[in-house]
Image (cartoon, rainbow, N blue to C red; front, side):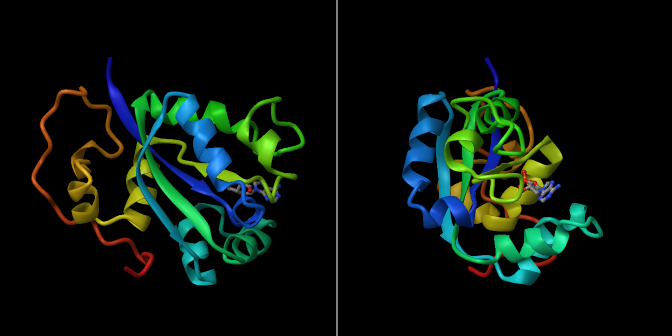
Amino acid sequence: MAIEYTLAMVKPDAVSKGSTWHIIQDIASSGLKPVAVRMTRLSKEQAKTFYAVHAGKKFFEGLTDFMSSGPIVALVLEGESAIPKYRELMGSTDSKKAAPGTLRQKFGTDVSQNAVHGSDSPENVRREAGFFFSGTELAVLGISIDAIGATVPPAAPSAPAAPAATPANPVKR
Ligand code: CMP
């Protein structure tokens, strides 16, 4: 069995409805373990940086307005096949089309207010986790920065603390 990490986010719509802890409970029930948690609020610029891959799309302004409209909760999740497993738990991007029992069906409204985000690849886990958590913070929590975005054997020893690569516009800490 190999474990991996993924980056999850509870979006402003779900935080404002008080759904955060229900979402975390569903995550834990799925077998994924939250190993780092941060509640913060993105500025418009930070939201643009986080979602830079969508720059130029017609929904980009609305997406970044929404993502900077209120507090979010960022989590690093640990578990076997964490990236695909969490994406399955989230359900389809559009809450209206998401399967019953998925997070987006239960807690979201539509394609823009869809309650949760999850990384879609090991490269994006590394980039998105580095956006919210420094390498030192993760190391204190027992997470090796080298293991973020990689599949590692569970028994692998922790690497010494190493500072995360500085994102272009990280959350202030
Ligand atoms: P997320 O998984 O956070 O990744 C990018 C986000 O863009 C996505 O969830 C949606 O909330 C949003 N998004 C994707 N497609 C559309 C769309 N057609 N209209 C509005 N928002 C969208």
